[in-house]
Amino acid sequence: MTDSIFKELHESMKQVEAITKGEMKPASVTRYEIADVKAIRAQLHISQKDLAEAMDVSLDTVKSWELGRRNPTGLASKVLTLLSKEPQLYAKFATH
Image (cartoon, rainbow, N blue to C red; front, side, top):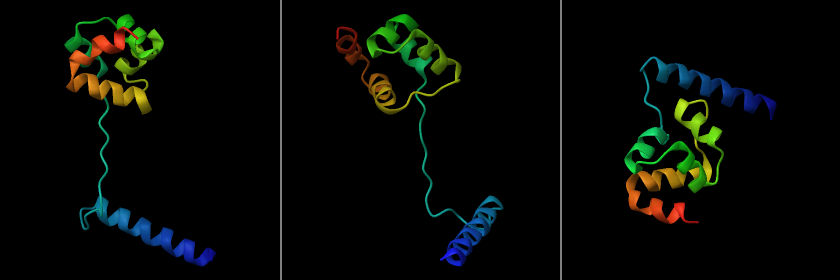
């Protein structure tokens, strides 16, 4: 069993090398979009504090997102994506 795992890992590493050199295309590519929190805030015309309160996160969290020290994940990421596409929903988040 250990030999089998080693062979699979070795083959995978050879494929990574071939993909890196452009000799082979990856079987799939997954891309993640990271919300541009500052742009979303600008679109909504709100402060960092307003966004933090509406999303029930700390002001430091919003600042970290905007500075790129951390990225929004999970539900926060989904909410920010939704707000960027439908800014009128902010009023609903802000009142709850």
